[in-house]
Image 1 (spheres, rainbow, N blue to C red):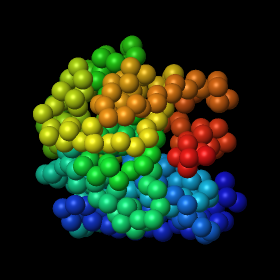
Image 2: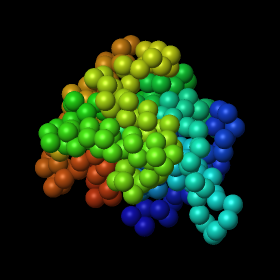
Image 3: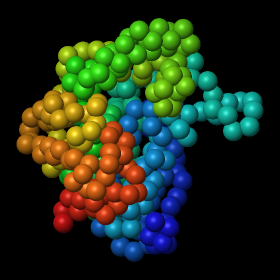
Image 4: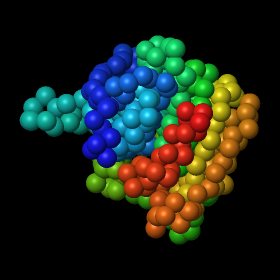
Length: 298
């Protein structure tokens, strides 16, 4: 993996969300010709650093790739005024999942489209990152979208007994804890700390039969605007993004015919993949290669 990075240039950048909030990202560039632009959009409570290996791999193949953190996550979280290298408390921080889509994801697509306006723009969404594709008005700028373990994450479509654990945690532990603390702490087992509004909207969607499709968001109309190519990957051992949950999400893209593929770990020589395993470097010559070739139209 290190040898492959010799011809990849990596730059830490900052760019404004649509409301001016400063978002932090990492740009991965091939030292040779750029043939495609790719935007990688994170899962909930996941910092951009977990996508570093995959982004470098795509850059090695001639893609200009951007990873970034949503507001309140990773390096897009404001620093504390006192103490060394400490993040500011999320108590009182205003953000929701729909804000992430409308303000942050929208801005990232716009930034990539403006900067690489002669290149086809591909979108890779992990979990929430794939859901956001349907919520952004400028998804018409995207030629191809690959969704990885991205689903309409209602608890009803998760596998047993995980779905009961998720429902109980979100509603009996998570919601009361968030109201008490003013934010969702990562130590509760969700990953990164989350803003209060993000967690509460997430819990509402998880508890709804059709996830975000049961909300009254005007942005849901943007699902039908997307007319590019779409491929969604689900993994047979992922208890959250089951095939029915993935199919429910992709059904929202009614202007196209999304392709949904189910991958068994044994098919790619792995013991497990789950919800996060796609981004492990052991899949460089199997899953990574397959998605890269599809994104690049090869």
